[in-house]
Length: 176
Image 1 (cartoon, helix red, strand yellow):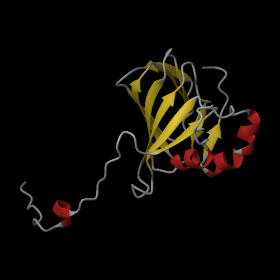
Image 2 (spheres, one colour; image 1 turned 180 degrees about the vertical axis):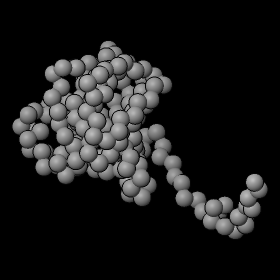
Image 3 (cartoon, one colour; image 1 turned 180 degrees about the horizontal axis):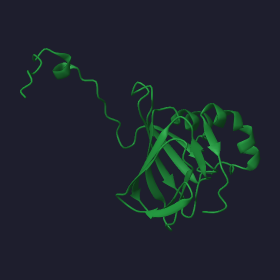
Image 4 (cartoon, one colour; image 1 turned 90 degrees about the vertical axis):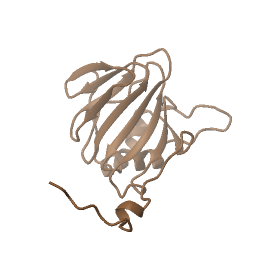
């Protein structure tokens, strides 16, 4: 089946709709007392709401709380380090080059098993979850001091924001 190609003046050939985000670009936010450094690389504003991307540096031994997203699916690419992932009621380990996909409404979490900072690329589809990090993440201190740890009081303070982002915090004592 031969398809006729569009003419060379068609926008499919001429419109430069893509973009590049360089390694050092993006807004840096600190989360969970600086245990996670999240660089927001791509936002929904840039992708018509289709996708967002964050690059995370995760402290050795740190694991985020088990949670689920009600609006976005989440995917992880392990750039460095060894991680344990929670997927529903099961766990597995993943290392450099591994890709993990978590559909919305699925309990999940991760923990850096390495003795070094681990690096994750985290994708959200559709976009939206990145706005939580931009609004509630801590700005880095120019002197290098870490921000305060996220306590149960901090999570209570941002509970409305978690609800607005359809994020459900779940018990995690059975996997960490």
